[in-house]
Length: 268
Image (tube, rainbow, N blue to C red):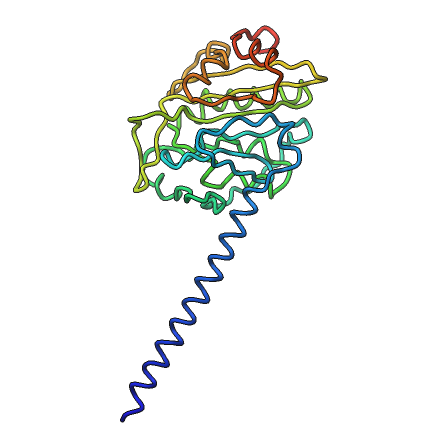
C-alpha cells in the first residue's frame, strides 16, 4: 500500500519530463524558423529595401517584409519581379499558414473567417508561379491583409496585372506594397487585424542604371477609373506611412524621383 504514492510521484515526474522535452523541441524548431526568416539575403541591398518603422524585417526566399504587430500585418512587402519570374503555370492553392518567422507572432488566418474580407495577398501568388515553393510561400499570414472582394478582384487586380506587364516590358521591376496603417482603423478577428482604408504600391525600374519609379495610392474600394488616376508621388506615400522607400539610392536621384508624380515614362 505504501508503494502507490511512490508510483504516483514517478508517473508525475515522467509526464513532466515528456512535456518539458516536447516544449524544448518546439522551442528549438521555432527558433530555427525565426532564425531562417531573419537571415539577410546577400542580394538584399541591390533590391533597395525600404526602412522599417517596427524594426522587424523578415527575409523569406522570394520576398521580404516589415511586420507591424500593432496592426497584425506587414507594413510593407518588397520583392523583385524579374521577367524570368513571369509564368502562366496554374498552381494548386495551398492552405494559409501562420508565419513562424514573425517573432512577435503573426496573425492567425482564422481572424478572416466570416469577416466579410478576402485574405488579400501583398506579394501576389500570381507573381510567384515560377516554382511551387515560391508560390506556396505567398500563403503565409504575414503576406495577407483584409481586402474587400470587389477591390481585391477589381482595381487592385488590374494594378497587379499592370505590374507584370511592366516587369516583362522593362526586364524586371522592384515592387513595394502594403496598406496605409494608421490609428483608429476598423479591425477583424480576435487578434484585431486592422483593415486599411488605403493601399499603396511603389514600383522601381532600374533597367541599365536608368532609374525610374512610380507610386499608386488607392482608397479601399473598387473603381473603374484608369490606373493613372491613382498615381501619386512617392513622397506622398512616405508622408502617410513614415517609410523611406529607397534609402539605397543616391540622394539626388532619390529626392528628384520621389517628388515627382509624373507617369510619362511608364506605358499604360
